Image 1 (cartoon, rainbow, N blue to C red):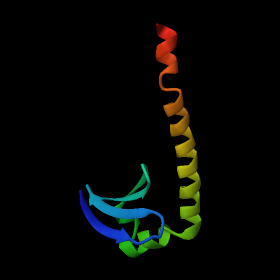
Image 2 (spheres, rainbow, N blue to C red; image 1 turned 180 degrees about the vertical axis):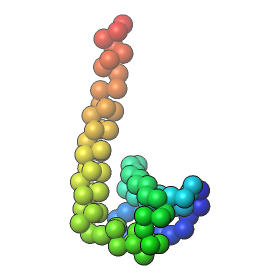
Image 3 (spheres, rainbow, N blue to C red; image 1 turned 60 degrees about the vertical axis):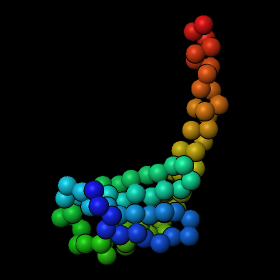
Image 4 (cartoon, rainbow, N blue to C red; image 1 turned 90 degrees about the horizontal axis):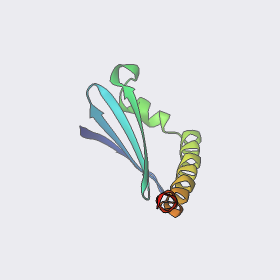
Length: 87
């Protein structure tokens, strides 16, 4: 897997990789990440990918990060509850 593009953004780290005839778009925020795979033949190069990573898309990514953070916090908070019930 090799990095083919870093897309600058004030909040997210956005990296595009090339691997096995696919582009992988990885978006990171704090301790969470989301990745999206697309076949290289489905886009006309990196310019298409940059257009896909638009403000409306990133707002949905932000919402999903918020939900992921809530899910992880809840799991972290109750990580020992199941084990305590078994004892």
